[in-house]
Length: 468
Image (tube, rainbow, N blue to C red; front, side, top):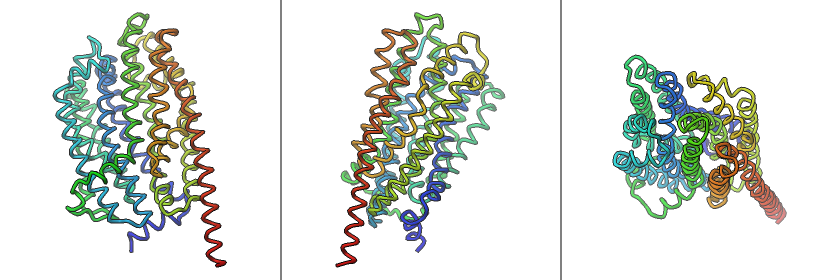
């Protein structure tokens, strides 16, 4: 009875109330996850200096790749779960989550092995300089040990949210972040372990999140996962990962864009007054801080996901539209706040990561103001990508996501420096934000009109049934 009531609420409760229930814990969970990197950078900046921060920027793409595969499975399983519950197919929903568990374990072990074997060539690929490479290897050598825990813990977190327990998902992330935040200064300043201490604090937090998530899975609210559900089905696995492709591309595209940006920054920074290490460290801070803003935006989109997915499966198209528009509106408001902070108060943000010289502060301020000039548009674009994922349209979801990170940002990063030098890397940000917003707007307007027509058709069919 409790299970039925939980799913019925997705189709009947006020949209605003449901968004508060699902979006707030989602935002907090993602924000906490982003703070793992931010906390490391703050304490490393204070205790080690900008070369330590440059090293975390070098390892950052590797951690994002791992997160991409975790969300490919976790967010895909969450979308699959919501759609199947909306269709009343609980057995299929359970099979999807069971298959997701197997895939998460596989990817976690795979990336542990690959990380241990290929850390140095990957650090070189991601833009490590002669000065930052030793720090990157010290930091990354410990971070890779936590890959199985972060893959499984993060992936299960998405399933727990969609399964109807967003507060549990939130608390598991908060617990891990709290451990990281407390241990970071102890390991860096008291024990004197530098970047290795920051990495150790990070993986201990990830291990705690992993244990909380796996313990919940033993007694979930709506589902009853059996051994039969853990038997991998190629069809189910393909469908689950297909639904998660937007989240996967979002993260993987971040990796590719950071790879391009880091290498162009090192190349053009070497010929500038700043040198290669200052731009590499400063731009890394901009990317990490922008991840906080992105966490809010993704959180609103993911918060709307079970509402959108359930009602789309149940053919309640008017509620689908309302949930999407509310999520997009909330994300845009947060993006506007971010715009004000980045344009008018960048130095206050920079100071959190340690005191550096005038050249460092000059480039860091310029990076915030130029690269994030049109960040106000990214809330709508981000939520729209997740919306298409939620209604089972991975191709459109991928187009919306790819448009910013790959189709526009990477080419702009490679081409604009030819005319503008080091500043060209920064101007690639607003160019990508503007173009991707227009693509998302076009696809969203088309889908909204389609949903309106389908809603009108459902109403007309219902009226004919009553009259007949």
